[in-house]
Length: 125
Image (cartoon, rainbow, N blue to C red; front, top):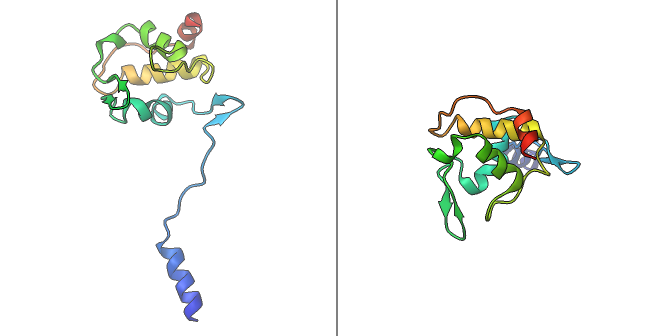
């Protein structure tokens, strides 16, 4: 009886975690939502609050960044990369690029109008 009680207590004290979901399938990110793409791809460098970071490298703030006012700039950077930022064009399709750029331009203190379209991302490729 002690053994089953101990097993029950261990099971009760062990946190339940969701089964991990793949982030990449067939060489492309699977997330479709701009917030999910940001959280799983961009936040690692630009930080969850989009304030950027400095340390082993410099990661610019995306929150309050006036360079995001013209949608073509962040579209270009996401697809082709820039300086230390890798190109994500091969990992994100046009809809995903549009979703994450629209998300960043409308969050973190940014209020740039208009949703970015997949057609704009396609044109930048």
